[in-house]
Image (cartoon, rainbow, N blue to C red; front, top):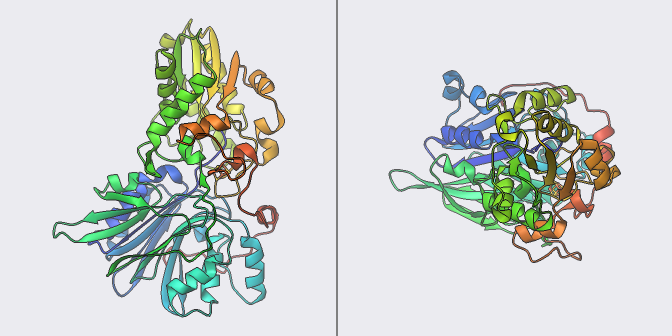
Length: 485
Ligand code: SF4
């Protein structure tokens, strides 16, 4: 992706493994693509909780042996953060930790609660002292004030009051709790790691690629609305919420997930190739000489496009691997810097060629324009842009950081105007039905869409009660900031 949508966050949790902390670090490393701004781990050694949080990438945050030595125990949860709500500061780095009536409690969350501000106001009026601006803390306070006795019932009580998209992992020390919201918007998967003695440890993670790195087995997706408890007796599953139609985020398949992950029993890589093949069917470019992906996220779709239309695939843009994804830092200045640092045209390949350029989306359009310009300056005869998603016309309110709708190019310009803006010789997007076909559905069910596709259709499945207030209201002053939980 060349501009705009940012990854959300990653969660990881493991129960009952001698190297729980190391496994969590490795799992978070595999999930780094979902959040590079900050990372945190809370572990439990049977008596005490320990934590480390840092506004760093995983490798740096846990690279110090002294940090690793202080994290102990057979139970750990972790989080990688890309801020979607709440400012960027130490106090917002997850997992959040609190001492509740039943004991210590840590929670890490991926998604966005769309009624968090309303709930927060009510809690503050009742005397709650918030220590972060993260919407996750609302869940902690709702649990603290619940009249239920045990932690799992308190969590169910709390989650029945929140609206939004969430996949979360929480630790009470003697158990890990994992929950996916009733619509299942954000992913959460279950795995198993068997040690040399044949003893199983269960694992929860945002994506299955976190299991591969530690040699764990992927078992299944946590179902929408499912709550699982991992403890000494194994795995327990509950369905405590009213059943609603699932709305998994279809953008996970286009961009967010790692291509080597499996979601809904489907290979993300294969889906991306399907997307490219659908795009080739809908928007062929028979006069082109080569198909070039915008690396890295455009690569599988470009392979699918090239295979479907019989035009050679080639790496016409070379990406520097010595910086992270383009949007490591959520500021305009670093975004533009990142684009310039990241891509270079492969001049020897491109010169004189008619190029089909494949990218997964155009958000503001500024980066796409620079890339088209770069390809033309490298001597391309023609540049035909093909986008492996429908036009991004609406903002996401479910945990993906997107610009306001007015800043989305496709919200205010026609495809022809976008083509002019980015300077391409032609431009085409995948249709919404083409996207559904690529993920294995015959077509989109307009009455009850099988996926969340709101950023393409404006069809929001979950109420957005106070999102605008969340974005504009003054932040509550923190009581303190702390590095250790
Ligand atoms: Fe995913 Fe778009 Fe829905 Fe957000 S609005 S959850 S990015 S499909």
